[in-house]
Length: 324
Ligand SMILES: Cc1cc2nc3c(=O)[nH]c(=O)nc-3n(C[C@H](O)[C@H](O)[C@H](O)COP(=O)(O)OP(=O)(O)OC[C@H]3O[C@@H](n4cnc5c(N)ncnc54)[C@H](O)[C@@H]3O)c2cc1C
Image (cartoon, rainbow, N blue to C red; front, top):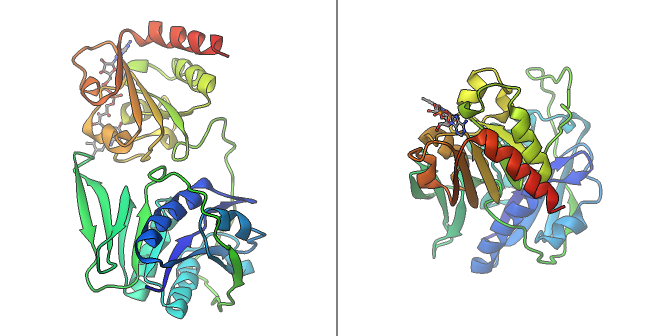
């Protein structure tokens, strides 16, 4: 076994937590076969990231820096990573199951003749150092175990929050990699608009409060936002609420929305369809607030409050605020 490559996800000056989660997954593999773990930064300005990455398990940090990698460009990023993979003969590539990685890693698999699985909830190695990946199937009703056969590199994206970062105190030695980046006339970023976020991003949030059709209209979502803000949670929604135009699509959780995995998920006025569950079923603790005692969500939650959300939400928010 040569190296496990872990993709660095960096926003502005900060390495995002998902990178440390994926390093924790890589450490699990390293414990089995002693492989070295190398973090890979692709962009225009890595900065001094090696000590932080080393703290969470990276033995080495490859920095592929080039002005044309400033903005995400799927073909250039795929080129850069594929060149590195060929150069260091990497066996395994791991990254968070982010939209960016979902976009460019299939291209890397194609260029390197590797194999790719996405949205793993757990990974392991067989006795012959073959990567094994567990992922949900049938909208979270069952878990499939997949492995790779005679293919290299073995590439996988890991569901956010599936692993907790582990402090490992590795060396974190920085290695600058000069890889020629070709001109690309097919893809050009014209403008970048960063939408200011009032609440934590759903895919990274530790707690989420989501509202469904039971909220009855968009104004009533203020009750969800009040509860979310009282506990520092992100705000989500079911597709029914999004399709009704009450809240924007970026709040949708589920099969055709975001896949989230917080420690606490509070579902308010949401019935618990399989498509919604597909996006939040791996939450650690699920709380449901619903007035229908037969709502399917009560079969899937850890705690259920059977009552009218218009009574329960203000009372719950008030009690939480009293706790300070
Ligand atoms: C291909 C496909 C993809 C889909 N993708 C998604 C997806 O990504 N995400 C998603 O969410 N859905 C998705 N859906 C839709 C999904 O099937 C459901 O229609 C949707 O999840 C229902 O949303 P809901 O639970 O808010 O609404 P409903 O099922 O209508 O449930 C509303 C709930 O609110 C409760 N309620 C009403 N009033 C109150 C009150 N005053 N107090 C307390 N409780 C109250 C009701 O008892 C009910 O249980 C998808 C469907 C398909 C076919």
